[in-house]
Image (cartoon, rainbow, N blue to C red):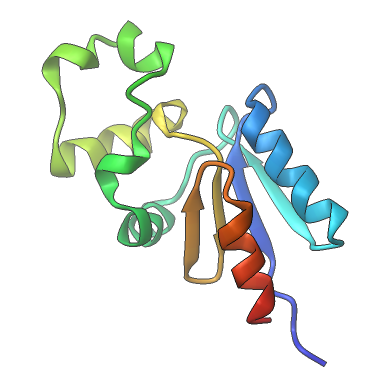
Length: 120
């Protein structure tokens, strides 16, 4: 019998795609750990692991109100500044971030998750 790896979803309860991701896994009876970014952000190690898979630039939600409200549209942070900013203010992250072991996706990605399930 294969070991089912826990799936982590980083998002917010208000994020429609985060809720859809959580529902997608629950419908397939996959255990999910939902981490609300309003309460807790990613650890530096988690952020690095996810950034390795999707790219640090992709993680920042440049369309969100939080990004605009902080005036980041004009300062355009890069590299290590982005990493530091995302650790300090996890609500700047694009959601949902879905992790399973070393795998990670950004946004609602059922195709990628289906591929994960095929390898368990």
